[in-house]
Image 1 (cartoon, one colour):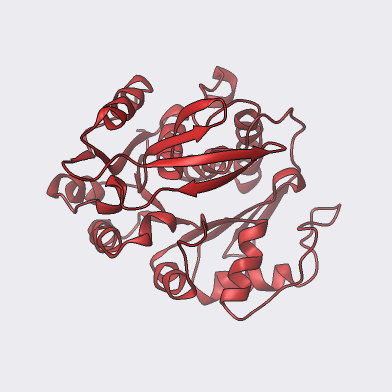
Image 2 (cartoon, rainbow, N blue to C red):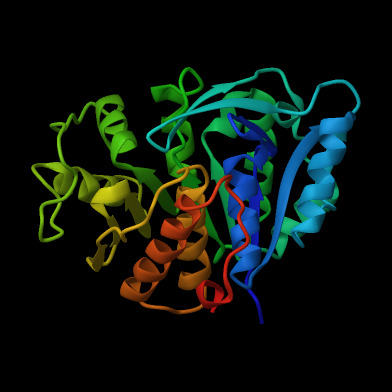
Length: 305
């Protein structure tokens, strides 16, 4: 039976130099979970406007359920201005939009009760209204469900206080090399900047100490650490870990690559794959996403098996 995986947060339009692309980390994550064979759904909100209707149609075209996309009669659909430098994105995220006002509808709470996993990002928690809705969804989950926090730090929409509120609610944590440094500073446990991994796939300096500290302090089952061209690491609370070198690819855009990586980790873990199998598959999928524009490219069949 396919795993039932939920995402909570933003669905929006990334306004790229080449034109608009459907995006938002939770939307990307839900799409890739579906592409990898899970039953996925996104709990979000769009405006009652042409951009919102286009988003719903685009999600429907990608075979992802749209039943839990709320329609806001007042706030507009979210947009993000994205600029790319050497394939790496930077963002200007519009505020006071529909996905800032996700409501705790009963249908969504009922859906959460049967879910095997729920993934949310720190960006969607920039409003009190969303945090209250998220916590109600988390309370509705069954005890065995995986709770994944994607630490998508986007200035100025995070603070030490917000992260301290979110981390205890998570069982998994996903972050990249830059976010690792920021998180360490916020938690008063600074680590030295520089390369993430040594050539043999060992964390440099005191980064490993901080990762182990995070696993212990917040009782995390799994920590997902990505470093772009440096590779990726999975750390389990029981002491297991897995390093995967980055795969060679011709980068077009890194938008959505981390979200596809997280989706592979959740789907693979729930399917009983080893950390090595999960990491290798996630690296292949993320490399492919980097080679295509936008965060939701159609995956070739060999990557979905």
